Amino acid sequence: MNAETPQAPHASKVCERCIGRAFANVGTGIANPERGRNFLQNIENEPKLSHIEVVGEESCQICQGVFQRLDAYFQEFIEQARGIEFNTYLVGSRFPKKTIEMDESFQKELGSGQGEPIKREFNREFGKVIWARTGKEAEFSEPDLNIVVDINYDSFQLITRSIFVYGLYRKMRRDIPQTRWIHRKDMSTSIETLIGDILMPMVQGRNYFLHGAGREDVDVQMLGNGREFIMEVSEPRIRTFSLEDLEKRVSNSGEGVEIFQLRISKKEEVARLKGAANDKTYLIRVKANADIERERIEEAAGKLTGKHIYQRTPLRVSTRRSDLIRDKTLQDVTVEDTLGNIAVIKVRAEAGTYIKELIHGDEGRTKPSLSEIYGEPLTVESLDVVWIHRNGE
Ligand SMILES: [Zn+2]
Image 1 (cartoon, rainbow, N blue to C red):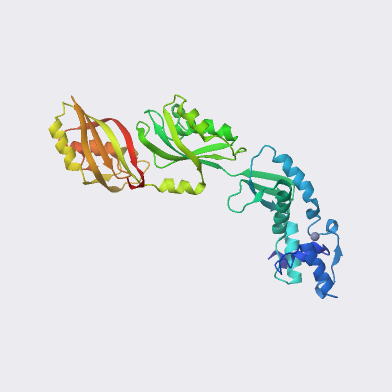
Image 2: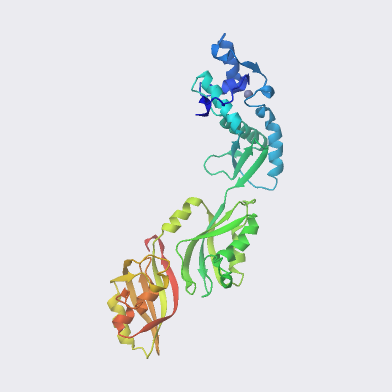
């Protein structure tokens, strides 16, 4: 321990507050300076204090009068926090290493074992000043504003809590991904940028991230009841904004993305979204080399309804995902329409089913496939998610 080493700084001039802090956990309802006074009055000729001179806070070698500068800190804080909207806050602090070591070794000398660190007293006392002057509440778990006072440099770090907006999106185009692909310039538009570029300036944030409940391929439309997402904006200076305005501006932008049912969310909900595993219904335009016979394709579809299929990781994603065999259940496979060599197939499948591979078979890696049962090569012309079966529907 530092306190045991010969270099550990020892205080010889100490204030009543720093003496009182060594007994901070004894009794309640009194502040540390009063505790210090009580201790000094009740103990005559305390040998542990024989080498200590009791001084005013500004001369104290431990706290160096930091508690007398709370007003000045508050003025500086209010100046720096101008334009930042917050209702709740939490105070933290960084003290010089020497101060912390001196505080610890002094408390050890007194041997009460009932003290509190100087940081904790400072955080509490400065928090009280902010509460008294602003009327805003301290909050420990999720404060709007984290205030870190660096006593080394008399500087502040102000970090606001991210804003999370929950909603559903529909994507009516086949050329944009869900999130930014920073390494591909031709994919600079995404659902994430279409929402984030509007929301971020509204709240004067620093950056944004879209968390989706799964994702569809770039060339797949997301229709029907939409996909759940949470948009996170980090370090916002503004917390009051219109969700309705955001919804309208994104949905009316003419970019083929609609968002709806927006509400304010929390970080915890991101995990729920990421863990969601719902059945989905797809509409697939399937193409054959020759005209499709309605009865024959209906018979093939019927054979897949209610069946398990086994899918080895598709060739197109095998560089990114480990090679596994997935067992997926198909709830329903029906033929909606046929015209020439095109058929429109509707499939309700378990979360994580590779639909394109279910149709063409992926060189035998998906078994059985519609192509295999139909007996001819089939390709996917286009694919849409038309419903996500949330809440067990
Ligand atoms: Zn002191």
